[in-house]
Amino acid sequence: TFVVTDKCINCKYTDCVEVCPVDCFYEGENFLAIHPDECIDCAACVPACPVDAILDESDLTADQSVFLNLNREMAEACPNISVRRAPLPDAEKWAGAKGKIDELVR
Ligand code: SF4
Ligand code: F3S
Image 1 (cartoon, rainbow, N blue to C red):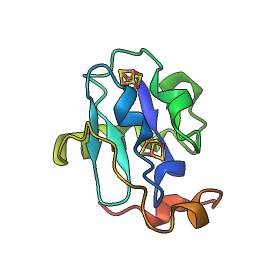
Image 2 (tube, helix red, strand yellow):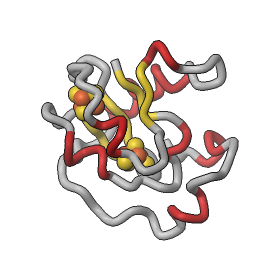
Image 3 (cartoon, rainbow, N blue to C red):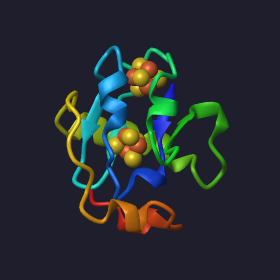
């Protein structure tokens, strides 16, 4: 399954939702999540994300492994999103930032 990681936080470019054939993205306040049971592993969303936030589960680093459960948890709690929106206002500023997991709004 594919997983949204910390790079999405405070950016939320939403280009990913437009290319997903099964509409399995869910929208948190400052982060998008993929529902792991709905993702069909097509990888279309990977190149669509301008900040490379989406990774295959098997490519997650030890630090990023927490995002697998986090995607499930948030996908189950948040509304579906299938239409692209404007990125968050400070997306450019946050695009290269490190340690963004502390910024995640659940
Ligand atoms: Fe959707 Fe494919 Fe990305 Fe899974 S890998 S979230 S099915 S676009
Ligand atoms: Fe996030 Fe990238 Fe999608 S920043 S909203 S995963 S396009």
